[in-house]
Length: 404
Ligand code: ADP
Image (cartoon, rainbow, N blue to C red; front, side):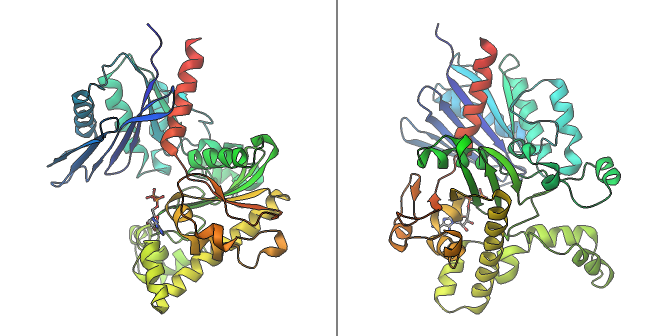
């Protein structure tokens, strides 16, 4: 029998489970789906059998990630794509925090699980859900390779000068405090796809990747290796995001504690869930913010301006870090769709060789595309991210390597 070619990708969030089943012969999707509101009474599983275009929904309580994965396995079985299929080569898991230990995709065994567990203090929201996904998948198919693909791995090439905070290294090391960065799978994929769009080898190209979704991060990628990124110990640092503040003076926290009388947990919630665009104007969806800006809303305009100012600062900073930039790539929900954000982020940067062609920027499209004028010194690109495909590709490559 020919070797199996399918990979199931699992992305377990704190209350959700996203999945895709891909066939790696042509990277096609066979099934995609999502379980939402896990642990609530109103959980929902939405499953699409891509080949048939058939979508099914299950509504009703799904208690935990284990029950969610079992429900997903049931749906896949109904399409004859079940976890027991001999064509399934591996399951690839998105794991948010791999610390400094995991620099590449890793075959999961007991030791790996223990290490992911040890990282819970630095990723309290994500790693527990990722672990449950891993453990449940292993219990359902103990014989199948399970591969962990870490959000932090792409950033482990950052030099110490970029990865360290300027605090006593003994204290930092004791508590594993350093800049890890996140969205690494996306930054890896998008920087490579940008090189491909330019017709060059990733090793020859320097790219600034702007991953602008609800969470947002920038990275400086030199010849395919990450040399700086905007998220740090946690995904709170850096750009203004949907609900996260991004960079602020750490003394703001002391001030909120001492003068504002807020608890640590309250400040944590404020900065992670009630700040950013949402905190500034009450909306975190860029579509709604743009609609309000166009209608003359002052709060939305200020939120947009703060968002763009921060973005521009990071473009400038990473330009300086890289020295030479071949391309700036916009990706994720905002980056791929919001032409006004792209236009505003590079406005006034002609001196750096950066510009956007208004006509090209306004065209909507699905694939990677250039939006800079033809003669631009630095290319500006829209490059749709595909984290699931990247996880599947890395998972399959590892399994293939191990089987030879
Ligand atoms: P996540 O971080 O949740 O994976 P996404 O990358 O899917 O986020 O991005 C979601 C965000 O993308 C939305 O909150 C919204 O702000 C933005 N977005 C999606 N579509 C558009 C659009 N057509 N125009 C502007 N912004 C958009």
